Image (cartoon, rainbow, N blue to C red; front, side, top):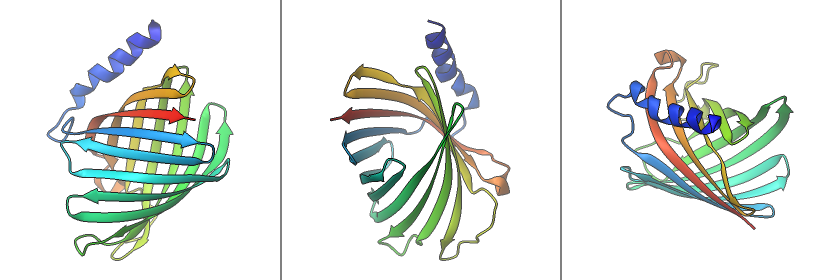
Length: 194
């Protein structure tokens, strides 16, 4: 009961942080996992973005992925590699390198690196991802964080093969803009494991 009250407080006290870009859209994911293979389908409400991502775990700590995305008329291919470094106390540490290739002159290709810090406590989970652009046309490469994507939510085990994770995502701008909030939105993730 104590955990449910905490979750209720966290989710419904967030409108205090509201601005024009908050709560405009929501993100919804379906994951299907079988052995070393995975599939992620994501759609947004109130936004013209969606993607499908194919995943393969080369070994338990290394995952390769290819994302095919569309945002309006702009199509994107995004290969990535994620390496899970390990667990240090309650914190799980991983990092990812991805490359965003656009089929449009409206956006330039670039590479992005992120550190992924996650923690679980019972049903509660959180993830923090500082991200850096590390290459591409017109990209100034430096050590300054470009943005920080953070999520907090709960994990509900519906049965031995199915989990449901509602969450709140918070995106903060980078160090150049003093980490000002870009948006807050709700999200869901439904995962099937076979």
